[in-house]
Image 1 (cartoon, helix red, strand yellow):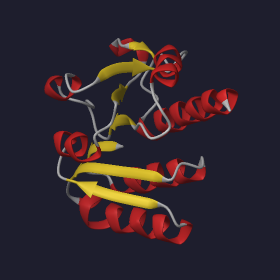
Image 2 (image 1 turned 90 degrees about the vertical axis):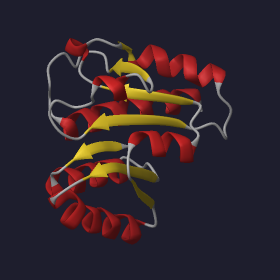
Image 3 (image 1 turned 180 degrees about the vertical axis):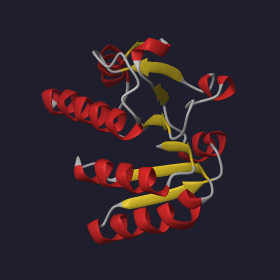
Image 4 (image 1 turned 90 degrees about the horizontal axis):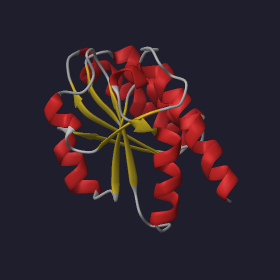
Length: 154
């Protein structure tokens, strides 16, 4: 899920990254300005062409309420703190069933997620991502690691 972005280009890039790595669902919350006017239609078009799901919601709290995930993971570079993503995901795999949802949340603008939003889930960081590599790169690295972890469990 991409939260709080005004960049249409970032929104479209993240959508292509999510779907390109084989994930079926992409949620955007708090899209404003160009992201809402140009990015949302572009991401929706990509989702439609690939037969994937795309959802736009007002805010993070609404997404959590509607989607009812078992776990909410707020992803950020490790310089901002947080648990190791790989360790948390390994634990989540042990604790969840196939129908349980895990929501990965990425901040779509600087400085990322607010203190209030950071309290809505568990802060995690992919191993070896120390500095701010940008939202799209963080999404790609994280989802690739998720994919590898789940592939190893199959």
